[in-house]
Image 1 (tube, one colour):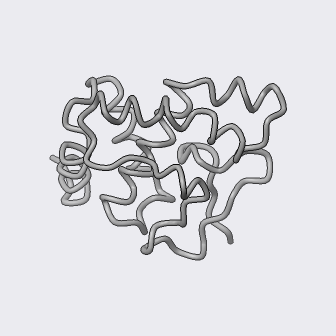
Image 2: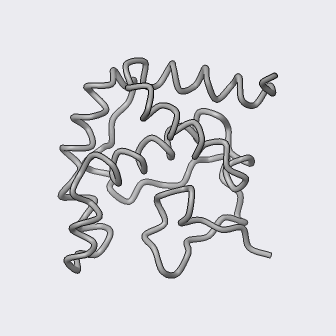
Length: 131
């Protein structure tokens, strides 16, 4: 039986990206359910998980990072590809090219921090809770 949080995540995902392929939607939902995302609203958790999933699975972001680009440059170069996937999936919002350094969601806790070794945008393994 699904918890209320899981139902809210499912509804938020369907509202944000109604045409996302099942395999992608499941990966996004799983990332949004992770422990460190629990303090976020379902909508924020789904949005952050969606953007991170698209960057890592549907763009050249990781290759750019491997080639030595910093995260801001890599994000800049994959912005159009990220928005194209969001459009294809029927997303109700897009990444703003004027706001590449997107502010954290308003409901994010101060206890979330970037992992020193990564770029901090893939929720499954790039965020940690501070002790």
